[in-house]
Length: 320
Ligand code: TXA
Ligand code: MG
Image (cartoon, rainbow, N blue to C red; front, side, top):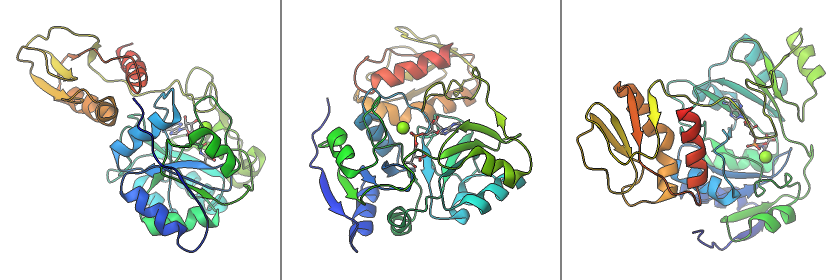
């Protein structure tokens, strides 16, 4: 299923940021140094590129990703900052803090990268190369750690190469990283809540806020393991999986040649049966069919290999 790519390894020379930005514009995948760990970047606004990113990591689960932006202004285009969020951004950006915030209406981070949630995780990295690349690219870059799923986060370009050679377009070798653990994640949706400990100590954050952080409880937002969340996008409609027929009062989420019948609404994840294309459309199509108002969304069977495994995982959660 996977297409072998030629992975170029370059240093952080004067042309590196422009070359990385070119790959991002073309929908490519690039590994780059940040101050925490190496990230695997894709254009946050390009659903196809984000789908390929999940595929490159292997055993994909469509966990929501962090959008990396060049500065606070770029972050405010995409996320709504309450006073606590402003205080934290001013104190810790650029740096190893990620804020989970409500998306703005104009937010261009594709629904696949936010796992269909109304919130977006956003951070301004302080690594000089990451900063130069974001400046050269001009948009948001989603980047999970640049390792195969289930492996530890990479802190050198050699770690990245060992995991992702021939699965991504470019690795930018910036030497060793500074922090070595991932960013601290704080949600500022209502009460500021620690979602993941990381590169900024909790005490330091609490000193800026002037009060303790809430800790997410295990059955709500708290990641069960790094990168795993139990919260997920839930449609209002009933979701009926593995549909082999469709009724006129139902909406149909098709995959490949659609079922016979006249559903009240129909969107196709991939008319040609391509799982990468299907992943790119998953959350957007679900939302659109849900908004159409059908009581039930019938979903055609999705094969259970490649990105199909993650698509089926998300569909099962949506149906639960
Ligand atoms: O240091 C870092 O943060 C690195 C570098 C590359 O920047 N990135 C990183 O990304 O660690 P990743 O994908 O491994 O972790 C993203 C975390 C996941 O635990 C995910 O569940 C959480 O962010 N997350 C993303 N969006 C979220 C949202 N809307 N609500 C709650 N959690 C979210
Ligand atoms: Mg990770």
